[in-house]
Length: 147
Image 1 (cartoon, rainbow, N blue to C red):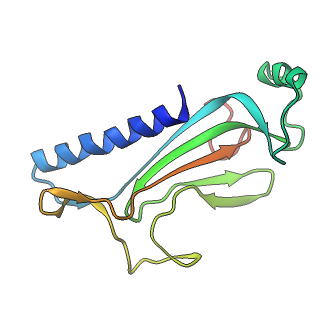
Image 2 (image 1 turned 180 degrees about the vertical axis):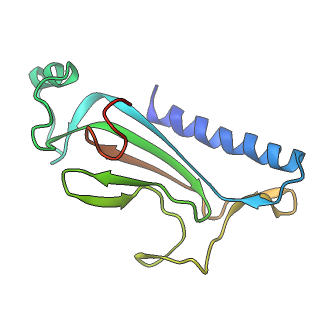
């Protein structure tokens, strides 16, 4: 499955959620959804192309982490409103936001939380703050090795 298809599925799920909220006379809500999936081929953290001979070895689990040199996973995230998704970057020892959510410059702005599903604009959702992000991850970054 391609990342485009994953994004399409997540966006379609927002439409289903909107219909469910309206059908049950709900109010408004924010939402964040992330799908983590293994890449068909690893990507080098420094942006250099992975040699064909190394691709097979890495795909079969060889060469371990090589200290975070290769990224093997993709996190596809869709969010509406101020809900947010985060990942723990093991190699760097940092936490990174995967979603854009509501920000004032570089900081989250709790006073400004535009966008929501439900009765935000009559019977329509407010998707002004809808964001779709793709983040590359290494083994063990915030989701565990069993995924």
